[in-house]
Structure formats: C-alpha cells, structure tokens
Image 1 (cartoon, rainbow, N blue to C red):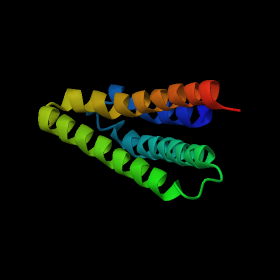
Image 2 (tube, rainbow, N blue to C red):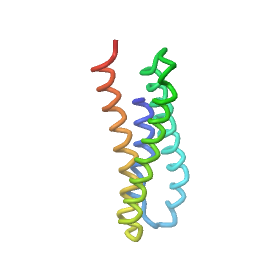
Image 3 (tube, helix red, strand yellow):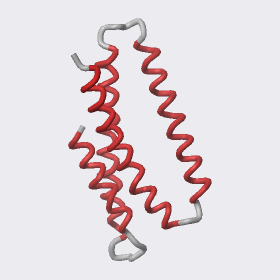
Length: 122
C-alpha cells in the first residue's frame, strides 16, 4: 500500500506544475498512466482488506461488498459533481484538483488502513 501511495503521488503531484507549454504537454500521458496504476493498486488493496475483514463469514459478504460499492460510487459521484459544478471554468483550480485529490485519497487510505490494523487486528 505504501508503494501504491508513492506511485500515486509521483503521478499526481506533477500535474499541479504543468503549464500549457507545448514542449512539456506530452508529460500528461505518462503521468496519467502512473497515477492510474497507483490508484488501481490502492483500490485492489482496499478490496482485499475488506475480504480480510469479512473472513469466513459468508453470510454477510455480499452485503459488505454491496455497501462498499454503493458508498464508493456515491462518494465519487458527489465529489465529481461538486468539483465540476464549482470549478469547470477555472483551469488553475482544475489543475490543483487533478493533483491533490488523488494524493489526499491515497493519504487517507494509508491513515485508515493503519488505524484498522492498529485497532482491530488480531
């Protein structure tokens, strides 16, 4: 998870400093790929942690995964709706959003995983 966080930060942070200079605009493509790899690893790690929480309790597994999926979609949908509605015409704000939202999400993932391991692990 720490490696995925560093990959996400390495792919996301440079977005804040890219400008419209044609000589460096091509960097968006490898950075987006790097950002996507880090986020995909974080998502898979989070899903595997949910399966660790469920354990052998097959009675509630579908409910837990369903709630996880529903809350994930609602959270992402609301966040995108608010950000696009407020900042769709401000390119500087969008640049910082593209950079900082994945970094904050990765940091939150690490913090909540650490809390879960500290408070609830056997």
